Length: 127
Image (cartoon, rainbow, N blue to C red; front, side):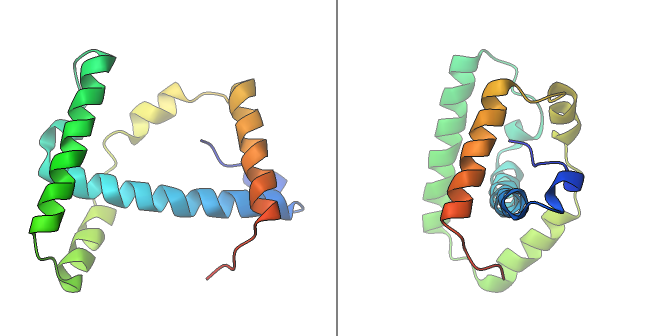
């Protein structure tokens, strides 16, 4: 999903709220992906297989990651060190995604509007 352009959010609190919540969700996903891709190198480059097999691979990796997470004793310092190192690594897939996402489709725009309305009706306090 794409954020609303910044110039359109200055006068529209609902769009600004949508962008804020999208950004927070994206940070969680990026942090999780960084954690998983550091353990499973297959995720550090495009998966060269058909979509069906890619889905199985990602599900298996997710399951293995969750098992490993449950078995490891991770303290807060290690987590913070990893998060800091991940933030400083280049985004391998970012350029790929930017090339593919030239414009939003009508369906994607409608989904974005629906989320914006939902977030407007269910506000959260910003930290």
